Each structure stands twice: as C-alpha cells, then as structure tokens.
Length: 301
Image 1 (cartoon, rainbow, N blue to C red):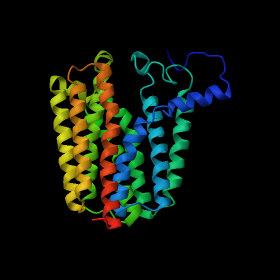
Image 2: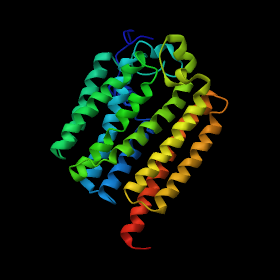
Image 3: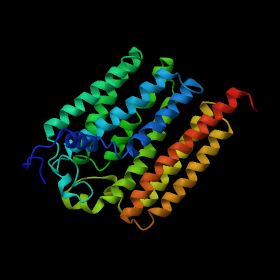
Image 4: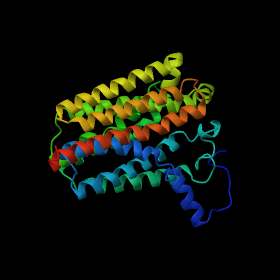
C-alpha cells in the first residue's frame, strides 16, 4: 500500500501511535544494540560509572538517534517496504504517516539530539556532525552496495568516540579498537537480520551482506563474531581490564555459539531470534566491564 493512499483522517491518538511505530518505540532492540557499545565506551572512558549528566545525555541521545535512524530508513524504503512481508505494515507504506511528516519528525529528533550534545564540549559537538552524516546516509546504502551492514556499523559505533570526547575531551587511540569491534559485531548481527529478508530482497533488487555472502553466510558471521571477541580482548589489554571483563567476553562468546546453532538451517524465525539474542551478548560484555570497575574501585581484591 502506498503512503499516497487516501485514508479517513486519523485521531490524535492514532497519529501519535503511528509516529511511535515509525520510531520503533515498541521494538527497543535497536536501542539496546546501540546503547551497550555506548555504555562500554562511557564506562571505560570514566574508569567506572560516568557522571550522571553525561549518562543521561548519551542515554537520551541513543534513543533519539536510533528513533531518527528508523524514520529515515523507512523514508528511504518507502517504495519497497510494501513489497516485503515483514515491512508491509509499517506506517509509511500503510498510509498512516506521509513522507513529509516522517522527514519533519526525523528533523525534530535530530535537533533534540543535537541540543543534548551542546551540553558537552566543542570536540563532541564537532564529532556529532559525523554521526548525523552516517545516520542519514546509511539507509540509502542498500541501493549501491551489498555491505550496507558496514555503514550501519559505522553509524552505530560513532557514539564511541563521542563518549570518550565527552568524558575526557580527547579520543585515545584504543577508542578505535572499541569502534572496530562494534562495527564487526554489527555486521554479524545485521547479516542475521538480512537473512530473514533475503528472498524478498532478491526479488525486489535490494542489496545486503546476506545476499553477497551466499552459502558462506554462517561461516562469515562466525568469523566476524570471533574477530569481535578478539578485538574486545585487545581493548581489555589497552584499558588494563581484569578477569570480570574477560568473563563477560566468554559469556558473550557462548551466546555467539548459540546464535550459530539458531541460524544453522537459515530458518527465517530462527535467524530473527539469533539477531534479537545479540542484545544479551552486548549486555553481558557491559556487565563484565561494570563488574571490573566495581571490583577495582571498591578494593575488594
């Protein structure tokens, strides 16, 4: 169904509900996947719990930018979502929100995120411009490359240098190890997500890593997962992290094995379940990281 289809006017409650669905308020998985690497960076940069003002700024910023990213994604895909089973009922193809309304909401959310950044420092404000470019350009990458997942990873990971600059007004070299690990992890889990839509994407001509990797998809996802863990272990060495952090990496690794079992037969529902499971992998890494600083700063050992 096209967004140009005529509908009877929506009530205010119905319109707000449509805006909420456009922002994926009812599907917080994307927020979690963006939030955990942001928290990794904040805790490492602060060597423990960050200040409450920085924590609030980045938590709200993650929600706003993720929501804005969903909106610009749906705007970019407004002519193809109606042809994909999983996305046909989204607000724009369903005619509940117009393309113009979507762009206005996207702009408002990005302005809100930028206002939050203004409470940090000049370097973080400057870095936020790069985040805007990455967030706005990612949705269009699937028309030009089979690796839009890399663009998504670059956008999702951009909060990491911003977190370091907000806390310390500098971006140390090992920040980019966390950045690389997040990009690798994002490509892995978003390829699982793309496996869900592979048949529809092939039919309508949309590019994805799942299509590019073909029969090697599971092996390449596995390589990405292992490389993610190795890179995060290197972060631990550079940041002088101790055993609780590495225990968190082991736990995340066990979830990666579970995800490989889920995607073994490339069943759509199982691939989607594996994608969702990455929330817990990111959480376990954060728990290990937070536990390290709790033990370190409390002097228990």
